[in-house]
Image 1 (tube, helix red, strand yellow):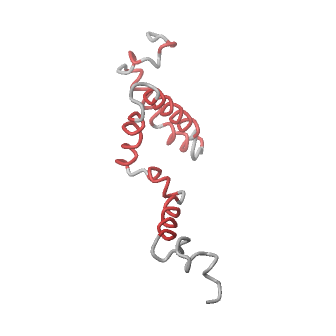
Image 2 (image 1 turned 180 degrees about the horizontal axis):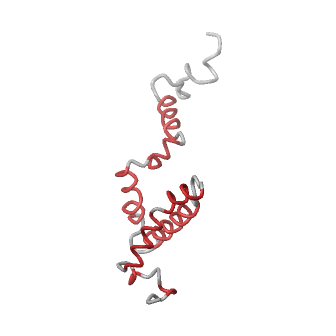
Length: 128
């Protein structure tokens, strides 16, 4: 073969006929496997594992490098927001707004005030 097998994933092969053929085979891999072997959903853990590892690696390089927190905001958060990805609102999904709502209720005008003797917990049930 005219190709060095040990370097097939290097960028120097990206624009070759071999790369184009390989890319087409991998692009249709899932549909081919479903059609030819009856595989419904194949190897989902492979891309998700490697995607998570790569994104964590890239984030860590910037986060602990000269970008600091900007590595997260520019590389992750903005993409989530602009892509409409729901996990960007994970605090609300976890119920953080419940605590905020309770804080408003407990601090509002109708809340019992310990500083007001007539409304504090000890006196609110006493006979008048």
